[in-house]
Image 1 (cartoon, rainbow, N blue to C red):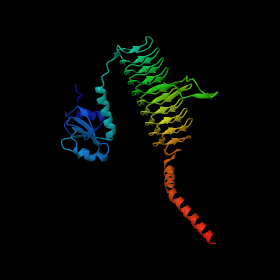
Image 2: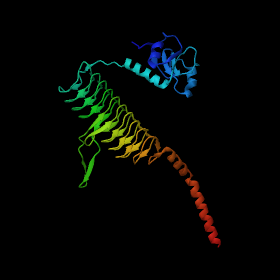
Image 3: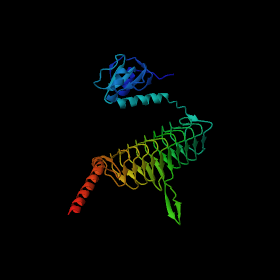
Image 4: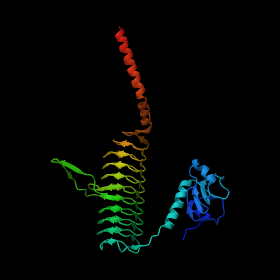
Length: 348
């Protein structure tokens, strides 16, 4: 059965004001402005899509306060932040669509010493929960996921297909692991001895705070000893590598293909854009923003935007790049001057 809500319920969800439209209007889905139909809700979060807004067939659109135009047949709800409000709508629809039926699938394996309540968790087909593991109420273990010995998973977590949590690692509440994420893989540690790379045992763990999301095929290495820490509320994209003994602060954003080498520390609210590389044993201060493909080779104080390789405050990097672009002309001028001087010397 489809999930149905009224315009008045929608306005209450997003703390918005109904600009126009009937309170009992039925909404059953959500879509982009150009794809929405007569029972969908959409949003206008960027003025570059205003043309699509004027042509939309959506039943209702969430808009910024002060917007009153748009198709006359479309209901409008005004809010302070349409994008954030629409995220609330998506969350409600997703929660309604998600079917959480507690229980342990016959094709799952749960060790008798594991601590979980079959009436309050779901363990799907092929999932494995090994000895001593603890799984909090409301958590959902996806197909072929693995919870290793003595690992701890908090309440209301979502561990999706093929994700792995290795031994003794700890997840807080409401943590999401996207498919293929690996928590607690061995840190990359070797000593060169007698012409060979000798593996150093990695005996620490990974500890993840509440409300963290880890993207698909992202890997977070366990500490050599002690803990690799991921702070509360941080969001880590797909295909990210975080090395052993790293500390990631609260509410950080780490985007795809970023690599963070071992023992580096990020403060709170740090953003690392795509393909950022961070060397080992550096500290990045809170509220730093590392733009795409930035290479961090030394500690940064934070509080501003950085770019380049090695990382510099972005204004310095922009000036440097402007100078680099002038180099061909400068080289040509130097060459011309040298030729002129040589010609004068030949004449004398």
